[in-house]
Length: 221
Image (tube, rainbow, N blue to C red):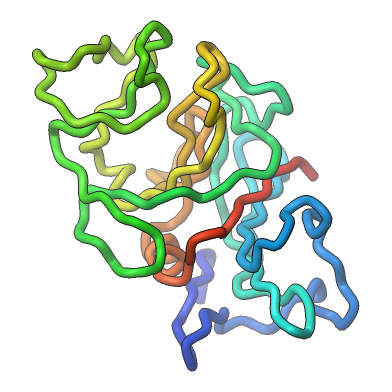
């Protein structure tokens, strides 16, 4: 399949067309297993140096954790990962987070998560002084009740990198300065400002597979 490994739907379950990785051997326990509660779907992202990472996709079955996808190339923050994320760090936050909903400039590809098709009036509020900090908002630029300046961290979501995206539940308490707008989104081939980015076709397959209660686990090698 080349450098990008794609997910295919087969008998209702997403599986890779590549050989099962060694991690799938009987009795194997993924590194995140004790930290995800009752979750049955987990996206694991492991930084391997710089802004590069590998993504594995896992599903819990009666036999235990089984890989759905393995070794998917990913890009993370330009400065790698951080255990103490903050606004402007250019680092992807380590930890275990929910996957709350999906969005994108493209139509809903299907799947179990809520999906919002975004356009020019969709924003992710990065204004630390705003009561809607770290949430999606819809407003005309000149009418938004928060700063729409990129320098303040606000993002307009109508960009190619957000052809498809899944929201990571980072800083749900919306503590000013602790970061926001963390997504799994379509890659442009370069580092991110703190998100996780992968090939769009692979991301679409993952979105179709995801169900409520899924989580993402991020760490460094």
